[in-house]
Length: 209
Length: 209
Ligand code: NI
Image (spheres, rainbow over the protein chains, first blue to last red):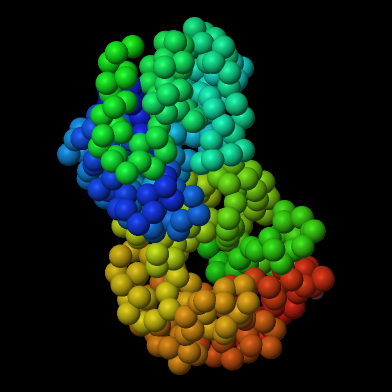
């Protein structure tokens, strides 16, 4: 088995709260049709069974579009649905365990400073989620990473760097100066009335950089 | 690798809320010294990192006493600490996945009726946790299993049956008429001032049956 080749450029991170009554699977499909290249399923305060059911449905969808599905935090869910990867935070499963228990898969790590970025690369991370770039209501407690530090991280590691946190169609222009490999978007796609159009607009902004 | 041989007779299920300010690891050690034969780590609303840290500490302890450690619900934690087993509820990871992803380990299943018990055995469960026998504040929403149904379950399956839910030093006498393989205890050990003595008293009651 080899790792799925990943296009990190427009990386959607899910948040069902933002969707209100809208269906997660349908919403992600609209985002993929709009141009999302990668999907991370992030669930909080949900039972294992419910998480698993959502993950199975999402895996069916992303497989049809040949898009990598990354599971946030939960290796058990990632293993059960045979996702393409796992994303861990600084307080989740340690990198060494993630790599041992989920070999030949994409392992991403959240970092909020250069030291964490260098350590994660050394430990074998496949990509970094660097942020939060801007403060955001979906993760209000997140430490902030300046655009200067984002550039420094990107220059200091060889693995792909995805910027996350408060990136929208206005702020993305600044973020792209850091020459990162992708932007991770939550509310600027999923909280929009027209999810397809929002994703599509991001694609155009990325293409024009 | 082969499964650890398990003595299900006095099966402790953890609940940190019951301990107040007392340390979980120290409390479980007292219970083991009192005669607990098996430990299930059950955590709710805790981060993966915190769950993992507790599980590592508990695994060190149970290994020293050569007592099987079973992790409730979370296969990722069970894998990471190389626990002896995983306990799943009816809404958790399905049995088939648990067996596939955690081979040669003890897989237990919660059942609340004969039909669930027969299905779990057919799917390869190593033991059943049958209950709740009595209603209990630690799991107020649990479906109840009558002592009659408990007997029926025990007579109908070949795998060990552990009764759970509201069992204390008074109710255990009735439960033991069902000739089950063990009793799972939460508050009747962990909520007691003298945890060692509580476990020790259960051992005496079990020996006298
Ligand atoms: Ni004694």
